[in-house]
Amino acid sequence: MRVGINLHQKTLQHTKCPFLKTFNINMTSEQAVSKYTKFCPYLHYKEMKSETKKCPIEHSQFYNNQFKGVIQQIKDEGRYREFKSLLRTNGEFPRAINKTPTGDQPITLWCSNDYLGMSQNPMVTQATKNAIDLTGIGAGGTRNIGGTSIYHVELERELADLHRKDSALVMNSGYVANMATLDTLGKVLKDVTFLSDAKNHASLIEGMRATKRDRLIFKHNDYQDLEQKLKQLDIQQNKVIVFESVYSMNGTVAPIQQFINLAKKYNALTLIDEVHAVGMYGERGAGVTEKLGLQKDIDIVTGTLGKAFGCSGGYVSANSEIVDAVRSTASNFIFSTSMSPIIAAACLESVKYLKSHPEIRERHQYVASLIKAKLKSKGIPALNSASHIVPVFIGDPLLCKEASEKLLNEYNIYIQPINYPTVPRGQEILRISPTPLHTEEMIDELVNSIECVFKSLNLKLESQYTAEQRVIFQ
Image (cartoon, rainbow, N blue to C red; front, side, top):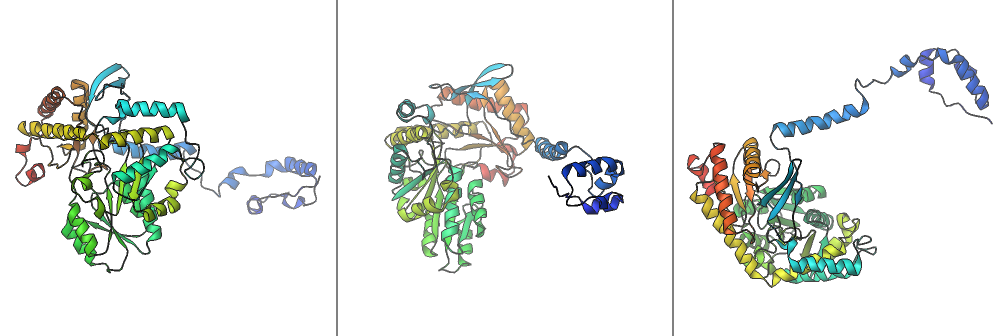
């Protein structure tokens, strides 16, 4: 057998190795090994390695230290996130069990996005069981390759009907739905400019960034600032106004009518994220646009199936051309395994159920209003919220975390602290999410416990803020 010797000639030359010229391309492998073994002592490995700077620490430690540094910084800033291991026993929501190293702790959930408790609705859970018996668990592929079940098709029809649109497309999450929709708009609409509310969700922000199209940011819910931005653009230029109906951290509601008026005046499309509104507002639960009678004036709606509908997944609903374009061009959708058919079956039942049960929404709004009133009577600084969200202002990450831990450890009340990057630094909150299933007794326990924690940690009450600062609570 003949062998060619592939040697690092430059390195060997630098070692001045006397056997360099003794190798030749026609040597047998046995001859090459013999010569290498004979002259091995002349190979100066330290000199060979000196050409590459050696890392002073072990390979994995070199990289791990960088990750550890970031985590330590997050911990030092008081915004390290710790996941609670919960057992949400079916039929007992909002009660749950916090599984801790020392044992089971019964708690009351006050921060769940299962806004209406639909994850444990008997009709929804039964629909899931029926679907398992009929079809099994997985979708079996992407939507294009065997992953479209009868449940997906029916769910999309139900969602299109809910939003009074031609069509709808279901995806694995609300985040993916926003990313996919914006991806399509960036591809299809030549030189499009996005006009984005300053407090838009991360999925909207990342979706717009990923398109590499121009983005103008207008002040939160400020339609006058939006108009100034629109005036900068040619009337014939493609443009999309991107905003949410309900903003989940501060509870504000967008001036939707004014945004629609501007879109018509300046020839822009509207994309509204109703993630924190679908199921909870409007006669049939289609969101704030339905409540205001504006469904037909909005071009594109995105929503979630993982909050008020109590399941998981997201969707986009619009005219058939827009939805078909998303279906045909959005990589996030095309290359993802389809939502499980049993989840689709659960979503389908939940959407149908909430369409015909407005009393659940009425009870939900009553509970939210009652909590706000009781907190105000105690002087607790809750941000002014026009929605079901009740944000209790803390304004410091370490104190926010400590307040949350005290509520959990001493009062069995679970409210997750909300810190940066979810909210800006200095605007940390305890975000309360009421549900129709919270009783008056639970509400009193909540308010009294928060009052005790405020006193214990010497947190500022509303009256202790300046008149200018108190505007956010009024």
